Image (cartoon, rainbow, N blue to C red; front, side):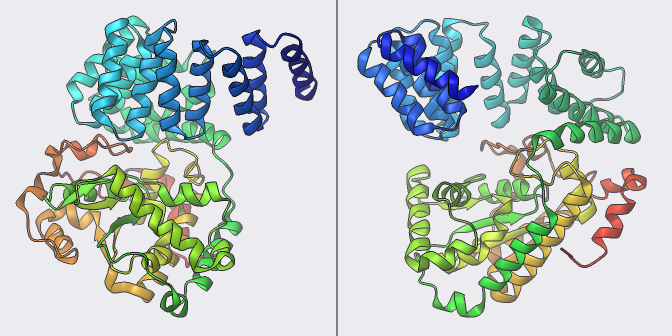
Length: 499
């Protein structure tokens, strides 16, 4: 069907080359077929014929953003504005979101506010501004915007869900709980929204101490997630980890050519193990800047088509050397302050051998936590496709086993460059753990590190709520509330990692 549709549209643009609708339909069809260069060429041909057509620049901007070409997307959006596109608030809101992705937070807020100055009731701009405020810790202002959105459109469930996460729910009579339950009774909600509502109700029930009800909602949410996430293949994951162990040997490291002696810091570990908390602690030190989850290595390897680790053996030192120089260029552009930049991408633990080869003076902060609490916390969080294992407790436990195998291997290769920071130890004695961490990083003691909850850094992870609060212990040993649901996982975690 799509092949015939493409043929029809190509015939139409040939006969009517100045009819923009045919070109835009053809570009969208080609993108949907995965023919990305052809789709981009289609936009280019339309703009060459009708350079003053604002909507063509707008659609190209959206295409470029989906491809991750953010700077180019901004330029095309600006072209659409300059050409007086209808509904400029949509363009300004999109530009605000792109600036957030580029870490240009002042510009992001400015564009979102410009969108709302044109149309104060434009919900996408309201919602994205509320998210930005929440990420910077301005929770009250964010909540007010979420409430305004619901006043305007009670079925805008993303705002309701953010409210459920942003504040504690004291009892099941809370209006937020009733609204979440009412939303789930609707038959015509899309699967992703249904998934999100279940996770939000799980959180609300957990707040109220209704643990069996909470677990039931988390199970329902994860059943929906399983249809969205890519499959997690336990044997393939175990095989890949074995390949990493075989490749990264003392001999390989000794033969590697370093890129830089800069004292880079990578915070790694399982998701939901305390990495965001530890980055916020470090970010309060005057010599440190929080980089957040920098996906540079994951993105570059994916875009180059390299298969990690196998492709490293094929390309030789020069090929992976450019990865290291490119990373330094990225840091210098995104964080020109000269501070030590922390990279808190937890699942970078698979790359530690490569990172040590490129940056021999790098330090690795491995955040650890009770494995049952870690597995449960992952299962209770609605995560994206990076975390394919997240919707199944058995898969989470399997991934934890593979993680431990890798960390034991790295400890054996370059243990003095790695420190384990235990979340459960931190919540008991944050001063002692922070002192050990700063000493490991050759940083002098700084009392402000213990006031991490006052940080004005932007936090863009699932931990955005917790890191704005003082240290509390209720997350340590949380698994005991759900013990009867966790017996198979307990047995699995107690056995050595298998395939």
